[in-house]
Image 1 (cartoon, rainbow, N blue to C red):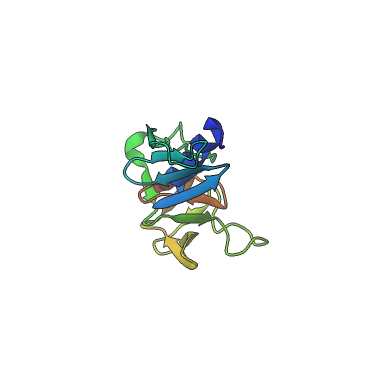
Image 2 (tube, helix red, strand yellow):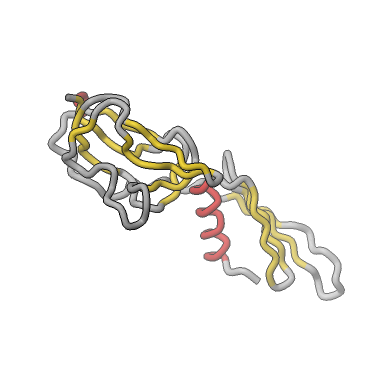
Length: 159
């Protein structure tokens, strides 16, 4: 049977990746986790005579997305910055290939239409471009990490 911590980790993974549904069978128990809008866990297990025991339902809150490392933006006034957000759920890549340099780094000047990163979704590589001219102030996501729709990827100080 799965431990509570393992179930919680599965719920966090479903919540952070946008997966709609996961089923796991282990040790006579079955765990189903459904994503959006709030992950829900339904557990059933077989009794000693093979009969199915009534399901128990555990509802856990969705995970809070943690902002990843990047530059320091504390010296940037709130009104003087622009957030670039992910238009899709997928995997964030800072470079075009594992051995290549990142598209942009903190402090880099960028232009409208310049590629900032790639978000891979369903084997499609989606280039995310700058919406304005400016300077990269912060990169909010680590390379090869899942991102959600609307999650902040970059902070840019407009030129």
